[in-house]
Length: 92
Figure 1 (cartoon, helix red, strand yellow):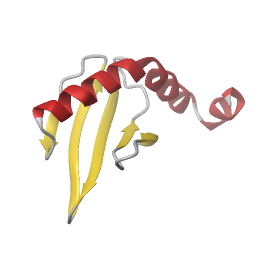
Figure 2 (cartoon, rainbow, N blue to C red):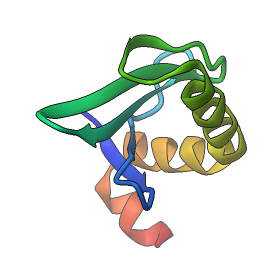
Figure 3 (cartoon, rainbow, N blue to C red):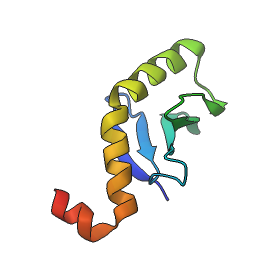
Figure 4 (cartoon, rainbow, N blue to C red):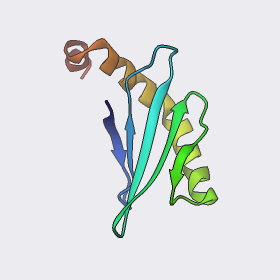
């Protein structure tokens, strides 16, 4: 399951999974375009993109910087999701 993290002004949406068994977090990015979406996925902590469709190398460089600079927040939110709704509600 994925949870929304942030949406940029151009409609690009970032979502994340809960923390996985080995401490990784799955991040998915979508950007609306005519008749669909551009899409890319990576795992934190290593940001290596896969399932990339529609994003250019420059776009991926921006996404990499954005994900890396937001990684502490994404990891925190992913841990809250893993802990369950009661802990997540208390942490707000």
